[in-house]
Amino acid sequence: VRTTAVTFGMAVLLLAAIFGTAFATNRAQTRRSVRAHLEAGQRLIAEVERRQQLDLALQAASLADSPTLKAAVDTYASESRTSTPLERLQLVNTLDRELTKVANRAGADAIVVADADGTILSAAGRQAAVWPRGVRLADTAPAAGEAGATVHVGPDVYHVVTAPLWLDDGTTIGSLHLATALDAHFAQQLADLTRSESAVVSDGRVVASTLAPAVARSLAQALTTLPMGSEV
Image 1 (cartoon, one colour):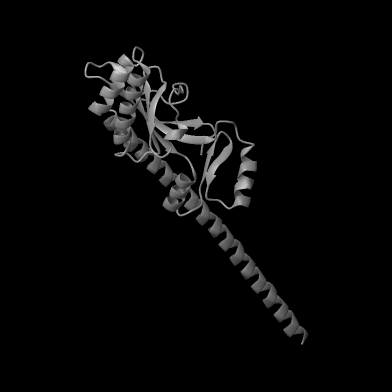
Image 2: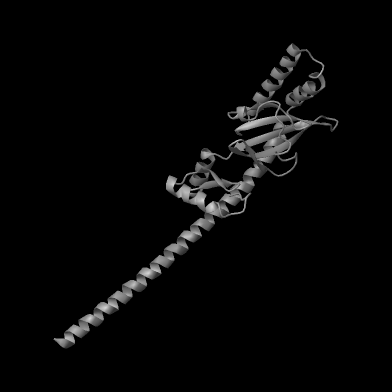
């Protein structure tokens, strides 16, 4: 009986050791799998972002080459200062109409036209109201020809790509800006692409995410330890 008890006890210990080792191995494999999935998702997002920026830059350059839009901007610039209020309103309406035509060919949340000094002349698109006429954006938006930049407009955050408005003689009369909102819709697109949850972080705060509220709060708390200006 004693021998049987000892043998049984050794068997139990052996099984416990086997199961413990298997559990630890599976746990380590799960961690490696999750880490690999996250890293693959980050690489995918980076590649998609690179291609998207290239596409947006080409699109901005194409839209900025619209002859009727450039004519409207040029006419506004040359005549608005000496026109009557009624004539100025007509110039504004013409510019708005031409920009709306351009916006209908683009998928950006907002298309903004600014004069040579960087002051907004007109905006079109579903979030045009965020970009009011007369506001100066030259200090925040990227210069024409530069890579896209993250721009804060009040509580909203946008990725903006810029293209110059040139006349045939090479004179710069303004700039065209394609603005993509970094909002819940954008975060959901990233989540669908990577098949995981996503969060958009700018200046140390979560501006949009698909995370559960409790997880989003935890992330926001963790972000307070990062340097200001961090972008994710």
